[in-house]
Image (tube, rainbow, N blue to C red):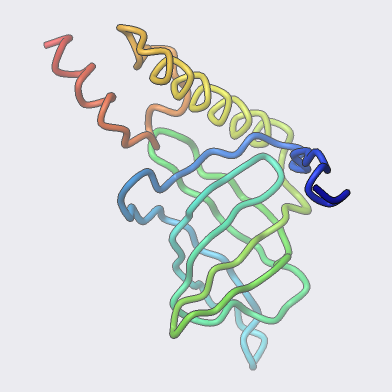
Length: 160
């Protein structure tokens, strides 16, 4: 075993991620605005893959704008609209599909906390599932609106 194999890898992410796509493609309403060739702001729809208080990963079917700043409005189920400013960190292209990493440069403290709380509740739910606890979905879950886990549907049927 060489030195590289013996290295312990540490998670570098500062914020817990909230996966938005869990098993299926589920578009989330997200528009980011970039200046067009004539200075106009053009909305571009996207599919949100995951989200954290520090950034997001998304899929677009048009090439992301080449601009230093993106102004976005994030709309999630059961959550108020969140105006966010960010910048593109990386882009990967396959065919006509683009996957991009966005780092937030301006997001309100409340929205950052809201996203962190949702991500933490989502991870807590994963832990309850892994431990095979009887009650996976809880009424206080702040990720309920964006969750599409099969266990969510099962818990709804039990309450009826």
